[in-house]
Image 1 (cartoon, rainbow, N blue to C red):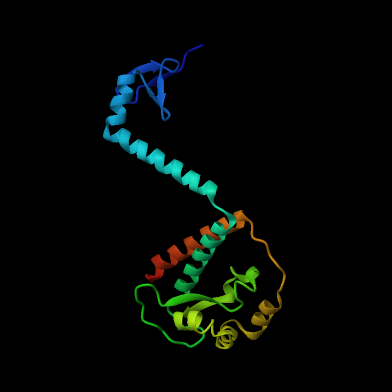
Image 2 (image 1 turned 180 degrees about the vertical axis):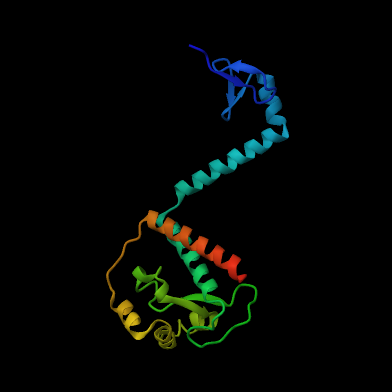
Length: 195
């Protein structure tokens, strides 16, 4: 049976796999080659890349379900703001001038706190100016009127009567984040709108 051979990552000399020194999954023929590689630009780049990957994996393991909910909600809200960027506020109809910090929010007809099962439904959300969403508590009456004109009374009443609680799994939240990030990026590329 033929023994496996490797090439030294520094000097490229062939060595048997059993005689090789290993450092971060790379093979070396001697300690001097390992040290020389570690001091080289390529070695430093490989080290920082491996360090970033390890840090990202650690952060991923430390995430809680609420972190996943926050990320999914952020991606969803961004998509709704982009989708409705060319229409006026659903409540007051104003078209605020874009400025640093944003002038549009993703408003929810049925609030996320009281109706958490509807937080990721597109027919429950619309672009809303900051004044209506934050300072007028969502301007619920005008918001509902705007949603009736957009979706129709039947659909709005169906949404309001759906009180079935829903538990979101981490896999579902990851999928929501992925889907709406892709949709928002595509929307930005196609229509050249800013968030």
